[in-house]
Length: 195
Image 1 (cartoon, rainbow, N blue to C red):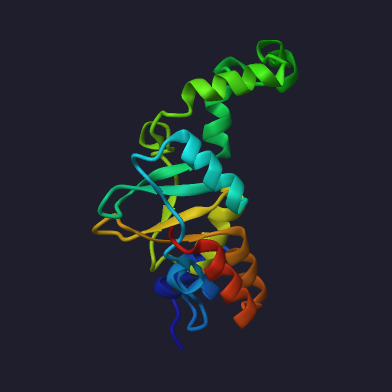
Image 2 (tube, rainbow, N blue to C red; image 1 turned 135 degrees about the vertical axis):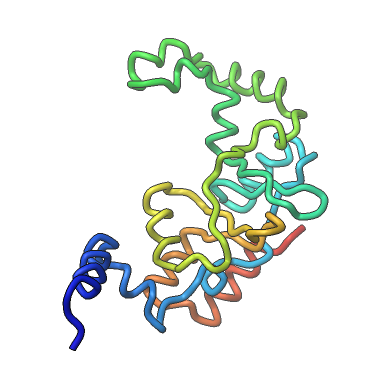
């Protein structure tokens, strides 16, 4: 039986890593490659804000990955980036109620502002600091980040930075419940086919 400092260090590391560490390293753990939606719909770097808005609305997405011509991941563009272009930044800072005086309560004014920005390229407005995962990232790490970020996460190749897929709400729920059926897979693939 092993005892002494090495056993104490291992058990201390296990406690420090938290309750999910043993599962994440077990044989039954899966990686992001196993739970992600591969070949998701993407926005191209030259797509306009109007094109992005149409895609977000049509597919009921919160955000979408933005890629260059070679499929290299540039960032995420979604409803928060779109609304950030329409609502003055000062209205988004701090407590919402005191800052509402900066927001025009006329929907026509927001539509006018949208018309003014509709032709801008998403490459200039995507979130380039978006947290990404890698295909070999453990499933539990993806779910942990998902719970913290509350948004779709891009899965990116380490070396090439090319987009491999996304981990969506549906992917996370299917992974947690292990309920990814043939029907779920078919629906996911229909929802995420590239255009």
